[in-house]
Length: 202
Image 1 (tube, rainbow, N blue to C red):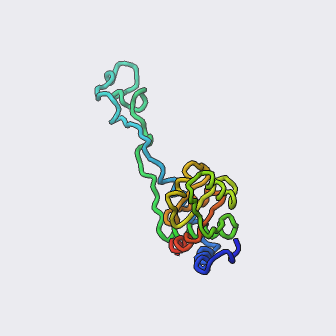
Image 2: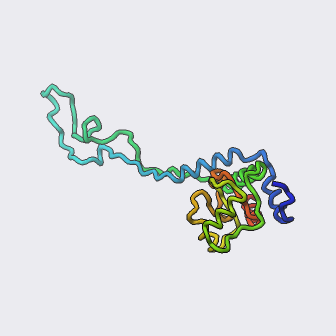
Image 3: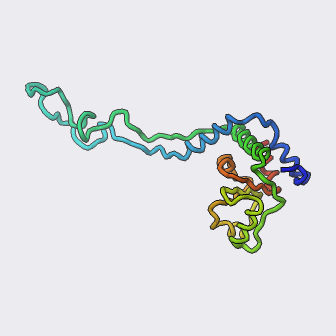
């Protein structure tokens, strides 16, 4: 992605994204791990012997039967009894510090720019709101497979034209995250998004 395609402001923002290129690999790993963990419901649950259905009555007398000593039928060794050390509802969510989030985003964006996986467009808009026009516009800059388009904002017509295209996604610079950037095969960055992205990583 040659620097001459940038305006002065866009070039300055791009330089911020390219700063400290060797840092942030662990931050990216930690953040993606947190994304996955935060999506887990943690709802797996088993009942203990105190929760399963049944009473506390001793199943037979203590002595004289020739059988082992037992209490109630809710003991874990019986069918229908409680479960020992089974899963219980829990919170899997992980907290990632703000500075780690910034570092991870800067590392991923910087890698995209250096590897030319990301392409900078002066603007992106579909005036007629037609899917055919959207596909033609995107296909001119990227192969039709997992395309992420990032801009400061999109108008209603552009959103309308992209809603039936499964391989492309429109995301604002304020909301785009590391996982979306990593998942895309091609990222189209509109110039007005670079300033917002630079602020998010500063």
